[in-house]
Image (cartoon, rainbow over all chains, first blue to last red; front, side, top):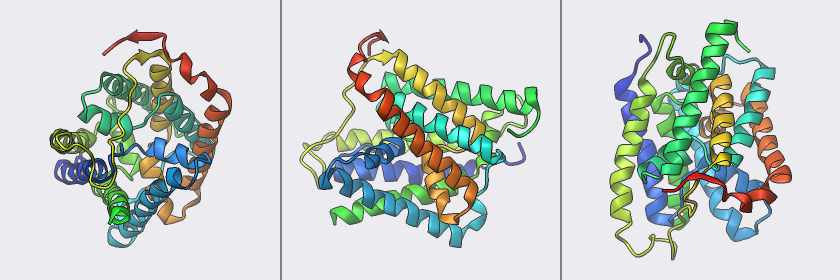
Length: 143
Length: 148
């Protein structure tokens, strides 16, 4: 537990929650990153794309701010390039099939007490824990 | 102003992820590693985000419509389907493997590092694969496990 950061994580969580609440208050939209991303891959016309593109521009600019303000806050994955390629495929396909990811189900849906989102969140946490268990304690090496 | 609120929402979300520790895949994996050196920090991220949003969501729903739109867009699905659970299960496996979920991975592209672009590329491929193979079954979403 030496990496435990309850205060920073709560403050970060509140910032995330305010971003989600702000998008809903001002624009009536659910902040689900996988949905915003996959909808941008479609050709849905100007109205369909524009708000998502502006949101995405803000997201990337936020990444640039982090890089200059707190470069240590952006880490790298222990997985190999092959592992990352497989993980990306699973995340992209799974989020589309399950209609949401950590933001859409884990934050937005949980806040609305949606039974679908609570079920999805418990499921991906369980399989995430199982995967880490297999990688770290059964295989015992990076994948 | 509408565009500024959209931009700032993305910006605040990204900086929040960074402050919370979500853009450190090792930390995310540390949270999922309940049988190892467990780091419960992500419970606090979730608690902070869900707590403040639950309150503000309720206040917002008292309004007839959002500030810059004439309607709230809220998911209409109610049923817990096999697809929902299968999708979440597959998503979780990828999340545990890399320590990245879509938001933190997109934010991390700001570093320009190759590994995160590999993840993003195959993530977009996974979304496209779904659209090409499964999207036309979306109306089959009726064989639910239960209802809300």
